[in-house]
Length: 395
Image (cartoon, rainbow, N blue to C red; front, side):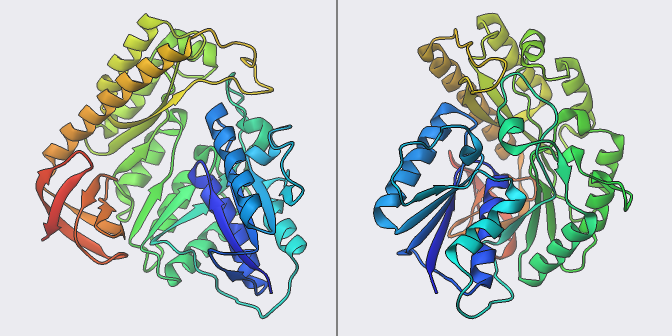
């Protein structure tokens, strides 16, 4: 029997991927421990900073573990992990093949555990992987491959299993969720949402992220009419300026973004991603982005400074100085915080899933500070608004 630990950097897909490896190792009888012999690190490569953090995590793990497996997006980026110690294995494989490779390399020994629970109150269930829409700045199609979907039967079966394990909330995750299709069984994302949301025992269903081109009447109807679906949508914007969007090859305009979100603005908490300092972004374009964010009714915005990615169209193009990116990022984060405080101040009560001591998220993914047992869903009332979320008490 070997001992192991897992860790991840990056998005919810990375989290789901590394826990597939975790479950495979547990099924083979290995033991999860902080002081393990084996470390598995699911890496990110969406920015230069993400690659640097991933390399640092792998190098640090190599000094305290007998063997380290580097998996995920970063592992599939050419030369990202060259020069690391000999006890580091870079697993440059598709996500579907990674768990079996790592488990086979570690060795299937010891007793078998048939049901390995993810140690979280919410479960991330991957329904789709890869992307077939090559934005000019994005390395994900190169490291994840073309869009492909799991079967609806496999997804619904995993959700039932997670509910049976005690998870209160399930998050459907993928690289491009709206591309989910099980054509043989006749499923698209709206149908999957409806059927997943009706699984007995599931208390909350959430989408991790959805591209604006997939926010249509059919999906909105499914989200509204499924009682377990949370009132939160994360819809990447990347830029609020049409010229920058064209240079990014994002396949939508600001008008399209605003028009498609208008039916759910106010009803859903809308969050987003924005890149600052893209080569086509001048000061005027950045100011337009700030105005677009307010017009769209967004709250939390995840800010990414642009960094050239190998193998992309803009690989050799990075004219915006680092200090300008830093300044724009700070302004955008400031606006995001202001918009969050505005929304938090309007809330009086919510149902909160407590996912760590003293903290949790409401139905619309608003952060709450509440004293309740981890794993509980509790109705709370607001007392005051803090810089970190709404201070509340059990109703």
